[in-house]
Image (cartoon, rainbow, N blue to C red; front, side):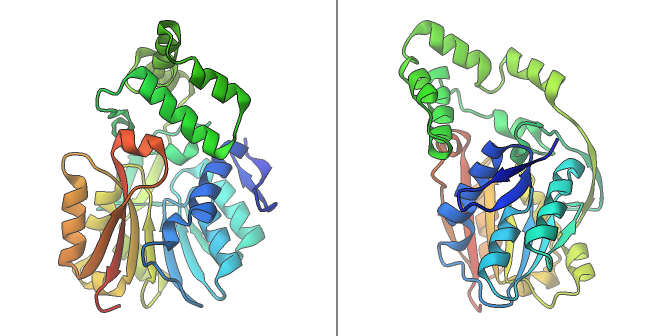
Length: 291
């Protein structure tokens, strides 16, 4: 069920819960993740937001960049409902698309945690790669990241007790990837909707846009497939990209090399989330040399 939640700037939006909204707000507004490392958006910019979730990036851009035109892509129907409501209220010129982007048109099953929809993915195993991280380290990362969003005495108390064997065992059961309890939770609580997919180039052609000033990609493991759906002739029309990359099997180097071959200067950075370090998640910024 969607609910109205208040962001730190007092703006009210639709979201599955207030914690998710606060996480995304920190990423977009406080940390300016998608507008740093040389990414510049001027008046009238055209933005493709791939993996838009409930649309907070579109809302932020609509409030800060005059004349911005946003195409927001979100494949999960329940999340798309929140996106549409938020665009209608706060970014009426933005266009929402209830599809995911991939290397080919079709359908895919997504795994969606209804309590944490920002992790919705076609590749559920991508978030289970913790590299043999200990339960205590995993829990400290989870708690530390939660503290950044919603400081809590209870979280600090739990964090201080992680040294005990009982605490470590409990945290392993509740938080660590690949555990039996996590698999049971998936079986009980996770939803698996079938969602429609199109390629970037098909979506770009349908949009009628002459170019894209920023292609933002945050698709929980499907980022390489999104790039594979860009036709050779469309690359010169994309001026900047910001991509969350799960560095699995050399993916970070492979994607960076691809972007550089297509004429971009690239920067790799890591957001200020401890979980990202454990899971090998990076953000790649790409700006065209001729841009």
